[in-house]
Length: 627
Image 1 (spheres, rainbow, N blue to C red):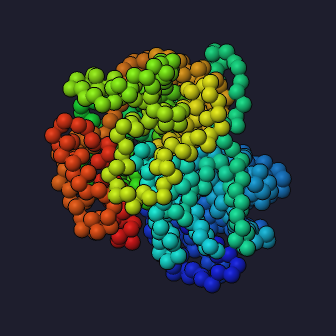
Image 2: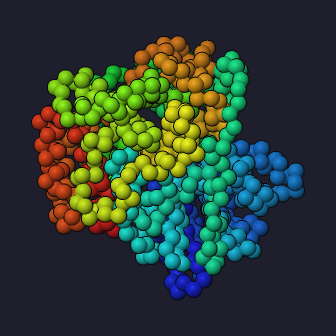
Image 3: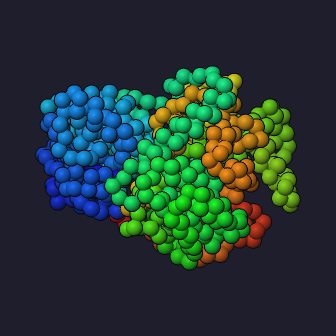
């Protein structure tokens, strides 16, 4: 697991990037790979690579790596590289290292772009083909690893983090108002756009070719929406789910450095732990954590301890307090490169900080909720979709009313989701808890978001193929989770929060074979009304204790709303009242302060919108003022 950055300057570009500049660009993300920095510089193209050694620790596996007049820097792990290596050896290829890097490079030489379809792993790849004089960029199927591209005129920069582009001196930091609107609604910009007008994310499941004349072309090699549906019995679906998940865990446990598992005590992490224990030659190391800010929600440490005992792992229980909240929030704003407001990054960052330097690889349970319907809104939509017409009639009558009862306020909010415009607005509002009656963009001065495409945060959700299927709203919700929420929010959270501490996170639930199988099943076979994760739980019976499979889900909500009244209250005022922020004219300060006063009084919970204001301000200070 690593990080890379590079450049490609088209014909006619008078500029160049020196080796010293390239090294400075790589240093911006030294945390992604502290073991080695490799530089490859040419007049019109170059790449730098920071290595976090996981597979084949020898220097021969350092990057950039060259072979067959191909030069590659890549970030990630390809789990099926032993099988690919054997196949390539049978075709006559020889290898100088034991690394997956050399296998990926040789696979590209043998099969060209078809090789990308054969890779089972998490990766972002950059290859320069000297013979064809072209640059190839590729991102894994679901966007588990990031790959950003800056393009303006004849300058193209590419890399694992946007901040690495800044020392080049070539980056135009003009803002993208549409992305700002999307951030305010959905925790992060949606789709391939970023908060910078000239920086985009390579779409998951695509590769791009860049030629020396500056022409660019992208090709899709994978999308969950292209998986054909199958019909099999529940019994067969349960059996295959169990087999494929176990295979994924076994495949993703390969490592030449110590590996551990974050064991929360929930269904997903418990399944990973117990399946990994079946195939580990050494005792597993499991970590459970209790944060002082989780006490209200109850502790899952007893469940985690039960699973650890069954797995026979060396189990570690950590207690982490939130005494340095402002420092943590500020650091995360730097590491995310863009405004980001999913507060679940905080516990993940704090936990990986505890194991930094001791363990480099961790198995994470992300993806299980998306594949098997583990979020409350799947049940809500199944039950409530038949009342959409009624909600659209009733909500206009309720919208102007205020209720003192928390229960009535929840009912009103639930009705507002079903009444929210078209399918894209309905699903987006439901997932992120927004309401069109409470437009979060009102905190900005109009100039900041002038030019946004009608200020519609959910416009990109209408581009999904599944949006056209008006009969199945639940299936559309599932594709929204897989195509938008997962790469832009949850996987962004996992990558940046863990790599900030030089820790690689692997996500077995997003293994190629398991995802392809699960997404081939009808949505109502994976999601059963009243039974969250029905299929996964049935598949794990006999492996995971029933009290965990069918016990009450604890859930860990980070109490940022309360922090804004207490531990982060003075910090909030300090940040938003900072002279440089005020001079930038970002916010309607009167509106922001009014929302905070309401929040402090307890009359209205404005925590979500204020959390976005804080994180946007911190990001702006790091990258628009200081850099």
